[in-house]
Amino acid sequence: MDAIDKLTFHHIKPSVQRIAIMEYLMEHCTHPTVEEIYSSLSPEMPTLSKTTVYNTLKLLCDHGAVKMLNIDERSTCYDAITQPHGHFLCRECGKVLDLITPALQQREMEGMELEGHEVQEIHYYYKGVCKQCREKQRYQDN
Image (tube, rainbow, N blue to C red; front, side, top):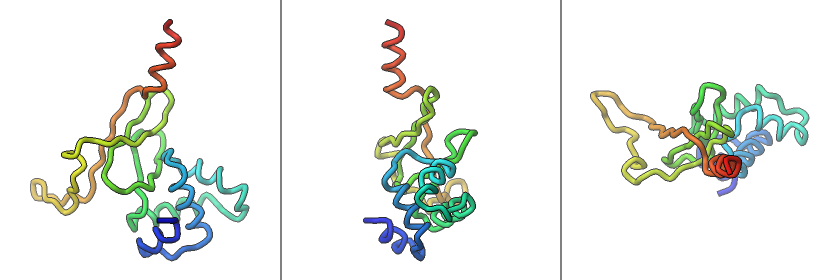
């Protein structure tokens, strides 16, 4: 599915800015922030503003086309993969990585009631040191 198809599927009218932002999210699975998206796209789109990026991301989130992640207190990042999965934040390098969590945790919980509350989303956040940073630490220790 390309960016236009994904926007249309989620009942979002495609525009040049919306397509560019969705394409960026789909091509860069790095869980970018508003600042990263704006910095990457603005040289090619001089009329793009941070406000447009914020508003577009809000629209995409509201329609379920992307997920907003608040895995740390420093920044909000965005993920074009909307199927249930976990995220891992490396406390060394700051990268946010996708994790395939056990099937039990991935099951769809939307609409489920929990103590009388309707569950609408679940987030699995893990924090630690990624394997690349661990390798660097091992190399530096030797």
